[in-house]
Length: 360
Image (tube, rainbow, N blue to C red; front, side, top):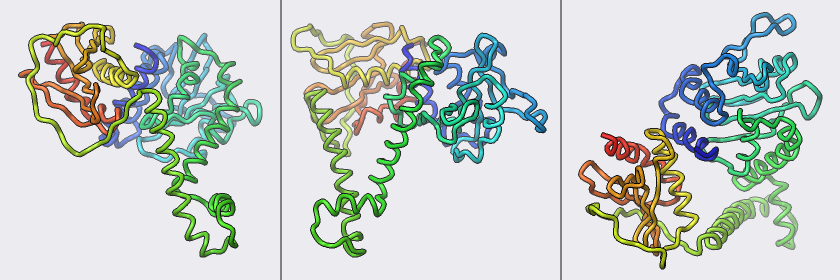
């Protein structure tokens, strides 16, 4: 399984189960251990690689524990402190990490609630954990730009020097992006003043600030939407709108309609949809059993490359609306309207059920 698919598998699990997890122990078992094993690639059941409840005497503090220590070549490389899903992550609840960072060889510390992972190092002072993370991974909304750096912390590709060298850049870029996000959603007075004084010739009074604050917020949202639409049109050479409708069920044919290379174009959007379906199906079967075939009518995701074992269909060809086709036990297809590719995750259980049906 590719690294991005491994991340997608754990992210899908988090989206589906987050509401069911109520304790720290449940968070560790359901989310954090799969993250360590599936994403980072360490054997959570091998104490030579992962030590739960890692203990070390820290000054006058005796017997304190950090939730996990990831070990490589006999040295502690990463320490992880866990909070329950949904808990706030802040420097105030990372006291163990601060203390352990100073007495171990670890250069990477992670504070997580199983959903959000905050990665720290010691950019500000040697052997002292920074107060600000250099990388923040939110599994509910993954920033794909961070994945190459995250991969450097995996067992097979561990490259600490490269991570540390890139950490400062990642830290400040991440902070600036979060600042943009905050200002776009709830602009501060200085932010509003900056734009208002460039388009409005009058004095920046309280009344003007109150008038222009919603203007700045709306302009920001429209700008982001325009940028997203422009990139999608450029990459896919297509666009579509969303309506709250669902097409009726149709029968799945015994054979896939014939197709050839002529006139069949596999788009980036179809491949991304395939990767999402594959990541979901990988919870039931090995990833090498998931294949696809593209045709003029639809993009089919298959088990064992067998057109009699269709897992799902992506109806993206020449349509203004995009649909995911799922199948019941009688091979009847139901098409679900997609507002975005992420909506495929909401039908994960139907996809897994179809895979299990083909294996029966």
